[in-house]
Image (tube, rainbow, N blue to C red):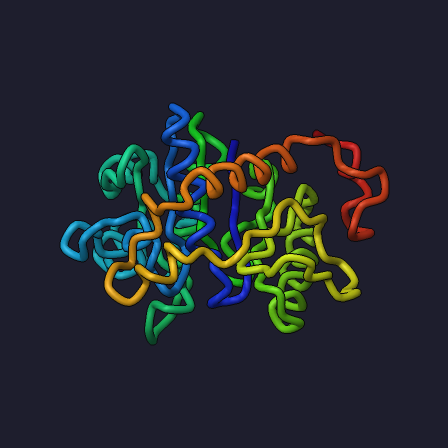
Length: 264
């Protein structure tokens, strides 16, 4: 299963991605995590020390030029060797730090973008592993060819109108690409909170309450793993996976999803 996780900054998107990857790996799945966010915090969330987190691919100008060229660039660079070469072990999973063109600094981003998209397409379409990709708020990394291999989009939001509005926008962007299997995770949600009427929100998979164990740790340890609430976290991750595997409603959330509303 190949999953992408997206949402507004600060809503716990990277935390959910880390929990999903860790949960799948502990279930015995061959799990890979990809940090494709500007913040580049997935490695820290997985408990890696700063010295053990590799530099993002986006910062390796020499590698980018060697694979893509400059000027007349290759849109189909050779990337099959890069996952094993650039990834590190993160607990029972493997972590690949790609980064985002938005955080790459000045200059033309065409070459870097071509390599990032080619590598993500390789991971999604050509490898038989469980994959969790931590995206930015948007889904720019997922081109139309790549999105066909993604099994589901996990849209994360906090219980706020701004967060949920971004969640609906992300869902619409994904639907434009044909990624119709989407679920919503409401993070830091208090009991009894109802969702506002925002058009286009994906179906709610699980609402996760504030976790005292996570709050107590955040000031001195970036890891989100091994909390006292681990059984509850595992149950929430199971709910997300079950929601993505369940038959979706006949009426899709977005009209552009109509052609794939019956796909499984």
